[in-house]
Length: 307
Image (cartoon, rainbow, N blue to C red):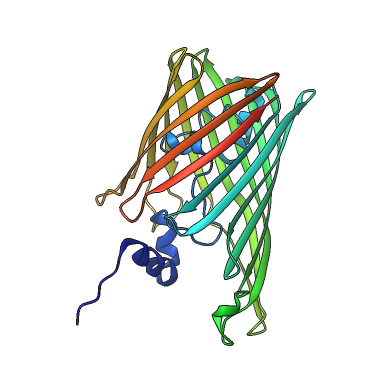
């Protein structure tokens, strides 16, 4: 007897049976980072060394020190065409301090995950580096599962909550060259309560370490390179390369590529566009990205406001 699976069915099967592989294959798992913001993902997820807008909340909080105006962004996607994700972030400057708040929400009644983020950044003069942006994220995570009535009487129900902390650095090497470091979830813990079985346990979210660099080729074009260092034996290093070109200060065209640095290369591509407009004193930017993956392609749409 032959069994036939389409790509979406295969993605769900991998997610359910192999959650450890899920994070490696860019398939959503517990609080996995799928890459947020249509602009960053239009450049293949190469953004740590750029992070010059409100998306810095998710990519490198030290990049908030590059902003001179308040910004708001919202994004929506269905990862792999399956799981809905929504996010929002707002950042502003308070004297010499840069602060931001953000949220990420995903899933449905079967499994819903929510992350709240509070960010702070400031500029300090460090030895050998000079003026350097330093940023910190504090994360609160909450999850609920098994609340879908169609799951049957034997479905597992419960909830989870926990915290995380990120650190970021950003410095201007030359007027056109910038470098950044993002250490994600260097401290974190999540406590799960299984109400059906009356048990609980704690575990952490995998930490991440990313080094990035951006180079402004001309005033209208930028190239960004990110190196995602593997911190665990079952995960390989990953490299991201992206570019953005602006036409007439209104239209942005983007493209990117990322892949695992091992013998079995898992290569992905993306492209994106942006439209920047001005309504009075408010800047309005629409961004679109399309991620090309072996399992399923995923579009992302963002709206950002600047004042």
